Length: 191
Image (cartoon, rainbow, N blue to C red; front, side, top):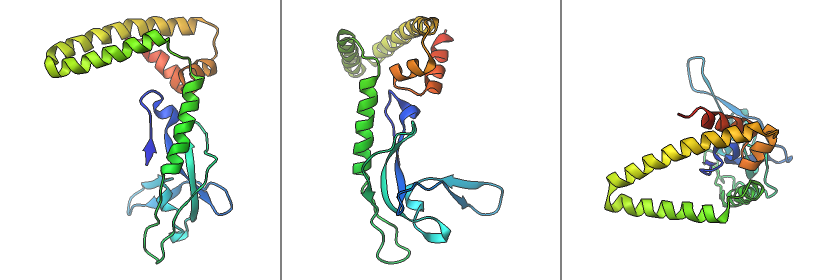
């Protein structure tokens, strides 16, 4: 059960994080899938059921691939009878992660309001065009791709020409340093 936004992708992928009775987060659980050398590794909340020597989850919280952990702890409803699966309402953990994403958004460089409005209008017009004239919509999308390729390349070169650290660039884009470096490299070499 993972959560992502289109804008921040894997830099801020949210999940339900397991919390044990002592307040710690357990490491991954390894599941032997049978004969062979492959052993499956997972941190999904439901495997922490206390069976087969695994730790037993008592609570969960939101967590993010960037290292953020939610402050709220939400109970795992343990089954009344052995062999039944635990139950989880993950909405609290998701809400906490959503607030984290709002904070990431607020720390990233803002788009000029005029440009944001224009982008919304372009998207609206393209959706309308899809219904009326899908081939014209495809032609417009191709034109936008050419424009974003040129502008993305210029912007990436401009960002790298400045004396900005990768940490600063990543924070401005709402990405990890690694993802920011990857994105700028991708824009730099687009043709």
